[in-house]
Image (cartoon, rainbow, N blue to C red; front, side, top):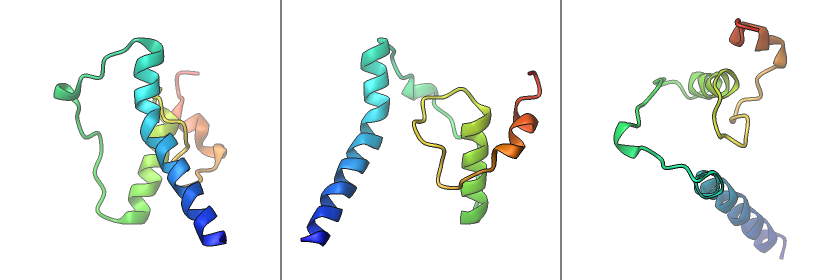
Length: 84
């Protein structure tokens, strides 16, 4: 029973994450330019990749609804927003 509930919860969370770009496009009447999409960073080490992801999310204006897999401390925010 608990395993079934966890599986349903995981499916709902995954569905919500997958639908965020679709919802943004529909709600804001935007078009995603897939032909000009690019990789902005690479990292072979998993821990390093999670940290880089959190930094990119924090320092760029994007439609990510989460903060990434790594919980980056807000003490670093001033380094990412030097124009403030």
